[in-house]
Image (cartoon, rainbow, N blue to C red; front, top):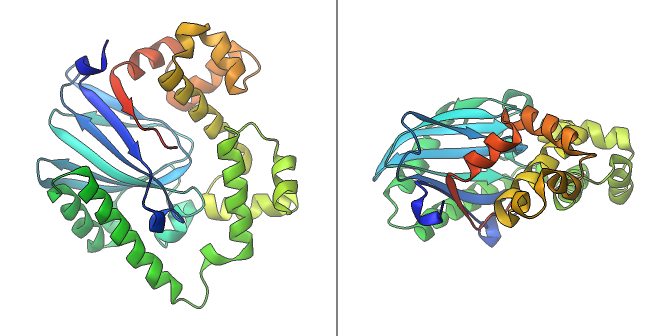
Length: 279
């Protein structure tokens, strides 16, 4: 299937410089034509908190806060709908929204229950934007305003030395696709493993080991999307490249994270045009 024939499109864009301390990516998902009707899209775990706006033409339909930590969640799709959102850095999302991670993990909430009417105001602005650059400016300005407010606080959890250690640990696990050992991560950031785990859970909402498993799975998904490794070397090659012990190990982890077998996963990915993947 060529990209032109695909009725679904997913695109990521790096956030503006001022938003990068807390945002990992801006993203958009467009439904031009359903592969089948009805069609349920499955969002796989990413270990982050995401702010989601679902729009039809220039009208905001809903605003959600989703924290896809360990479980996938399903979204029924309809033609003509476009979703836009901000995926926050793993260690920043809950704190930036002033919500304990334990209240967000694997939950899909009305954004107004988290951010008040500010969420709907931002979503309405996003829905009315004429192009993607305007959407991204809305995000940049909203994030900058919240960061400026946080800068006036006498104590901000995002600016503590331990927060910086957790941030470094997250970056190491992301860049290694979850393949770096926890002992190596702790040594690299200069924190005892137990201390790192305690603060990691407090900021991210899951343990470093769980986060590493999610990142390894996302690394595998990205390889399939970008490099077509399944065509070049088969699933055993994907397993080796992604850090799994063998194909059976990959299949178990894939089924746990996505609820799809390798073949069904590949078929599902082939229905979506992917562009500019950031994270």
